Image (cartoon, rainbow, N blue to C red):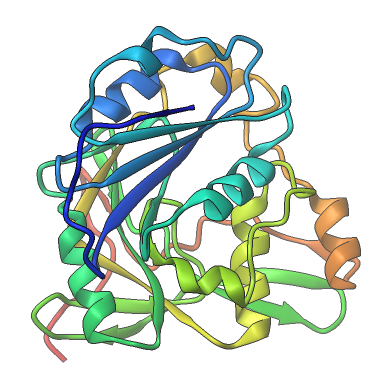
Length: 274
């Protein structure tokens, strides 16, 4: 179902946003209320039990396109449905427990993609409580037994500084053209982001990047019951991924971010003068 906010200019730089939702309606409301008016369309992939939400009938400053999916079909299927539905050339991919902060102008991310034609997507940093982290790292295959995450430190300075990495958080702006080379796998229920970026690393068509110039708020603790469930507790489809990529073991949980900022200070020299 789609709610239209009215006509908007149809230009080549149109931005959309897309998030899945299962049960966290409060989080979804906060996300929708954070979306700025320059976003043309928000796609919500709903795979919850109750999909007739009052939120969907509200007036929003953007077009709201709700994709009603089978119950508990998984995050991979949700992201695949959003990618298929998106008509815009740029899609911000995130989760419903996030908010687009005032310091999170998605047009800044778009400016980097427009200046760097080999970049398929770029994320900002995540603000989680009193901590900030990049969530960016490289992916490596070690022999035939494991896919591991390693730190990424290939920095570039420009009007907007950024670091290239194989893996970035699902809080970034992507060219929708990247889905022609590798898209989300609907059969990977809860580790779809790892599969997506490893697939792109193997395809080799696009680079990805992260920048501290944009901040996304991540409300990880907005629904403690959800966090304690299998869906929210970091459940990993290790067997599915290992079988798909022909390895014996997959390591996807290591937090080897190249930059983390806590109350104790910055833990990276990524943006120190060269």
